[in-house]
Image 1 (cartoon, rainbow, N blue to C red):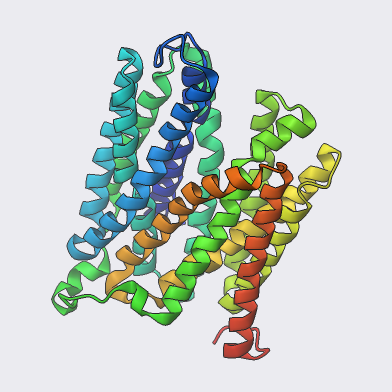
Image 2: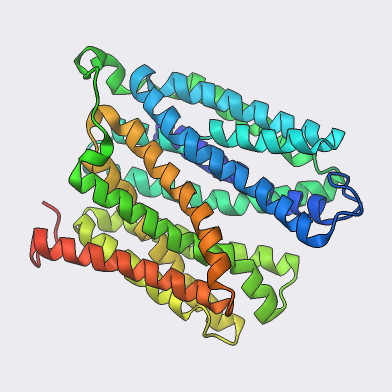
Length: 401
């Protein structure tokens, strides 16, 4: 990869790792009566609600901040807005560490929301990738950013749990994450070029249209919401299923997270290779059919080996589906609104997590397996939309124009 691509890769990886890092750290602080954040006499149910609220604040902030930062990057350039966002990320980590040291619940919650607002860095990185890529290079770069995104889901929780356990101080993972984010800020300042759009500022329209007015773009935005709804339903109850069905320990859950990351990384690489050989609509169909198959069969295996095989199918499908929706949004958005488009894309992805949490809570009332049935139905519905569009627009031609 070129130096610029490495900087974008690390920016995405660190953004997602920062989102996932608190999972094994914050949970015991809220659930342990001696954790200090909540009074010792607070009941278990109330502790769970506080924990879920703390987790939800980050994607809520990212849902709002991604669109806002993306739009600003269209107006003022990718590099300066990305740098300011990273300064906010560093500050957010420091505030979370202070909140843990001082046992200030309100500061921890505020810092989580603030960090989410600032962490629209993935959207800006994707927009810059679109700016600097030739059409034939763009799918490859997007697939590499997807690999970084999926690696972040693994590195975050593993490093957070390990640092907290080895240091005996739950604030340490946040300080380390802040230091790494600061290094990322320096790499952006030193090595990231300005977007080519900066040189064309005079030709960029001062008035922009609502992205929802573009028919094809609107279709991909709706597909993003449905697709990520399926993904979030699949992952929200992932650990619960492994504990209830297979009695997994925390260490075994960490290993399962590693296992699921491998096919997702393979899927990201495969999506980049297929994007130049298969039209985007057919790519979306393949990805979502694999998603539907893997998610629907997730509840069937009675052995871990069988479950890992099903997870492989789902993981490959998820990352191919992500590639199709991300490229679909980028390719159908105006050049001068790439930041806003990718910010909206990430915002819908994060918003689907909040929606999936609420929908999932209803679906699991008759049984946990219904969350996976619901995820499979959502993925299949995306596949049907991709198939319908492919047949209408392409007939049975599979190659991109």
